Amino acid sequence: MTIFPSRQLPSLVSRRRQKFSPMLSVLLGLVLWGMTGVDSSRVHAQEPPETAPSELTTLIEGIEAAANRQDVKGVLEFYSEDFSTTEGLDRRSLEQVLNQLWKNYSNINYQTQLQSWEKDGSAIVATTVTEISGTQDLNGREFKLNSTITSQQRVENQKVIQQEVLAERNQLTSGEEPPTVTLVVPEQVKTGQEYSIDAIVEEPLGDQIMIGTAIEERVTPRAYLTEFPLELEFLPSGGVFKIGTAPKTPGNNWISAILMRPGGITMVTQRLRIVP
Image 1 (cartoon, helix red, strand yellow):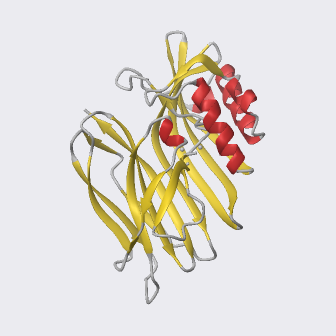
Image 2 (image 1 turned 45 degrees about the horizontal axis):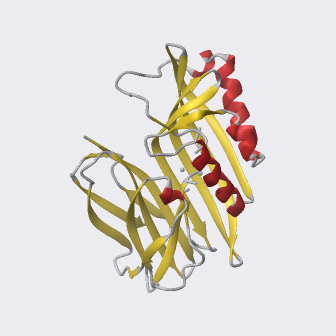
């Protein structure tokens, strides 16, 4: 269950060069349940949710309730002191991210469903889907957040000890007519592999001016909290079409598309897994 999405839109984009804060997952996948470190080749959570032990369902309900109260200490009670992810998040950095997220999003809601689970020795490995929605006011403009994060977590002694995000999609919109954006990127590529990034606006552009860009960022603890320059371009074709090259080392990247027109702003972020 992942409590934070990946990225967050900067203060209103009114110039061509902006600072962009990647705390949206939580995009911005916002980590209620996002587990890294589980050997998926060895563990396959196949038991149906209705057969889950009570300690697992109680844990999920407890984290969800604490997150909806924006109770950081309450959430952390369900995470082990040794909690870690392969992206480098630990219990302390999780606390920092949640404090920043809930400072920005005063109105946020979490709903988590257990998809499957499996016993692995003394541990339970659970796969969940978390839906996150919220609003944020930036300079008098309201931004709406919607995020869906599929993740897997390892639980021991009723504490989450590891998390891995399996799939993540986050969207921020603002304005009366934000563009409807379809972001087409693969869920997984091999190291060094080329891949396409297509961000397509579904509505006809007509005589409207559209600006935007697509960006790629490595998922790291620092990336959740820091800002980086954002270059916006005019988009006469009504979308963004780019070719990316995966890093030479395995890991996770955020692929984000930001598109703006007079009627509104849309930002979509998806997670790209880079495997050997």
